[in-house]
Image 1 (spheres, rainbow, N blue to C red):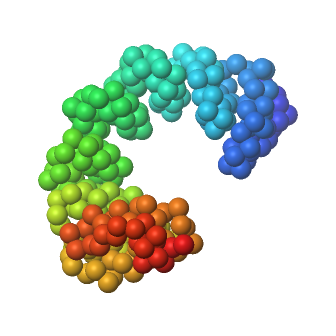
Image 2 (image 1 turned 90 degrees about the vertical axis):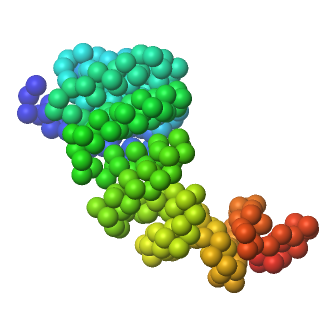
Image 3 (image 1 turned 135 degrees about the horizontal axis):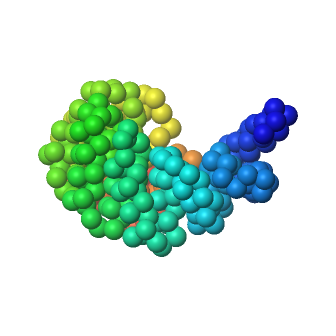
Length: 275
């Protein structure tokens, strides 16, 4: 390929990437398709096409393009996305087999461990999903992402004590990560450690004060600690300008051991500051 052709290709891919970021998926699809007409195994165009089609809920249409690229050699990113799309297209056995092959290769491509574990969990194979993440952690014991995934899986299998331990380690390694703090807080609620859970949620809200879901979780903790006024204030903040969140707020208020219950929905809405 000449230098001029390389420049044209690079510009086209850049335009496609910009279109993808702007969620102009049809435009990104067209750019990728045009590139693949002249080079059917261009990995960047195949990946662009896959993400553009996924944005239009048509990810399965990218399987053939990804398979052509995957046949050329080891490419963890392409193979992992291919496995995910195969599963999404209903070819779960093929997709999981692809992800297992990718996760077995060395050097490891860790997103393949995460995708494989996720697909196994969807298939109800939680023990193998947990073993997959543990295998990844054996290779990368400091990975916060893998610890987070393990914590989620352990919570789903009701191993709350171990989930709390794993997520606490993840928080200590990455104190400012809101996804870790949120997951830890939810596990601590299940464990009954409301003060520590509230601390985790407050750390998230320090970064994202408009995160209403986190504020609702904080309200749950405050109710359980007997801090009713603070909990109700938190729920009013959740409701402010978002009347569609009334159901969530009312449930938190009614389910707390120190909460309130109203027989009238309108009375509950008025109390919380809704319409």
